[in-house]
Length: 108
Image (cartoon, rainbow, N blue to C red; front, side, top):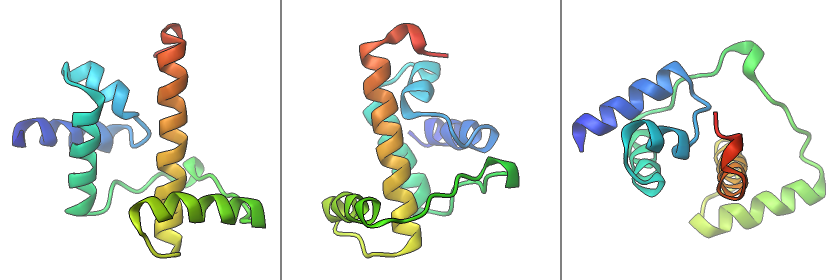
């Protein structure tokens, strides 16, 4: 497990936007295993910072703020910028994973 998490950390350091599914495919394990590894890595320290040109900025209008509140509620997380980023990232990755399950030909 420690060796696998080290490999997950290495892959994320190289490409912070890798999905759990992509990492799982590379390492030959399930995506849920990788999600747990990613959660543990984040709990032990911040993920690698994105490059300045890799930043996505969204205005938090009321519908988006309400959607983030729902996503945060699942983890009983506070309304902070960090928790909003985490909720948005998780939702985007989960959506992409669902699309890839339905359309495996889109996998990189």
